[in-house]
Image 1 (tube, helix red, strand yellow):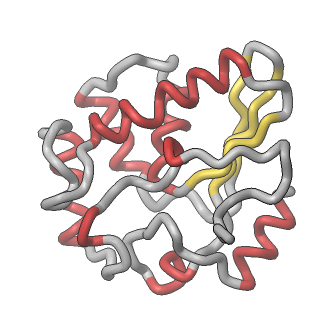
Image 2: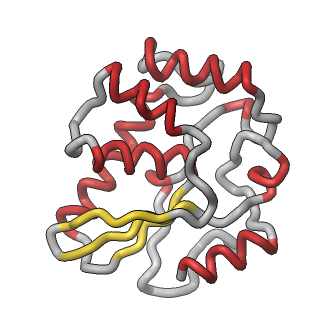
Length: 168
């Protein structure tokens, strides 16, 4: 049985809101130097991959933004979108900046400056066509705890489970 498949009918899993694809950096230590390299690419080379084989900023945007726009247009009131820090920040920036179809260099720089400012369990509201949509950063994972680049399949820690329950 797939452990990542939701067991409730009203929960839908989507790869579109998973963490950025950092390629071979996933699960490795998140260092200042690696973050600076990724941030440089986001700001100055948005079509360049964030690591040698990961995705680019623009690929991540092209994956995330249409899915969030679909939620805004069609999701029922009180829908919850649960995601990782990198995508949480992207959605927040997209909403705060007037929901642009693409991001300017200044907006991409704004994105990199917010990195690290969101805590596990943080959330905000987007006004959707049918009512509020809640965007939530997942609870603490083993990768968060260890200071590693996130893997899409990182497990929640006991603290992360408590954070998820508190947000719920």
